[in-house]
Length: 187
Image (cartoon, rainbow, N blue to C red):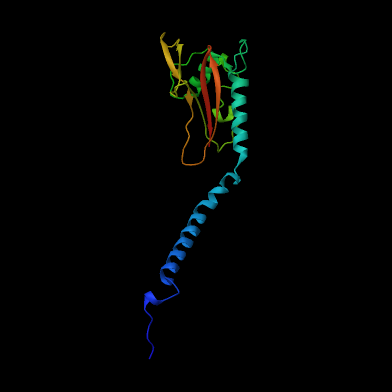
């Protein structure tokens, strides 16, 4: 009859415990590699660089063609205050205090919407926002001929649905010598 050997007389060591420990370490290593290897290659994933080029072009078009202060001795990112107010006031369809001379400040057809002005395609959504250095949306004061008061215009136009990917560009611009951040978002 077969007699089992006692554990303390066994010269093979703790086979079961060694096996469980080895398999456990192996499975943890495989899980770790499986989780982190895909993230190592993420920076090399193919992205749509066409949107970044498009939003860069929109930024240049807006600043240099439509809002740039051509009388300023500063750099080319100084915006004309009246043209900036006209752009944001006329693109806000809820603004009822429109000065007639704003149409003279525009450097594009007043019937075009913001997407057409910036060269976006019909299915693109565009948002333009100018913020203060502290991150709050900037506003400029203007005199309105409609009621003879000084009012504020918020420097933000367009809406973006944030459920899809958004391409963003930020530019530092100057209005009356004060620095602002212009952000253009494209979806």
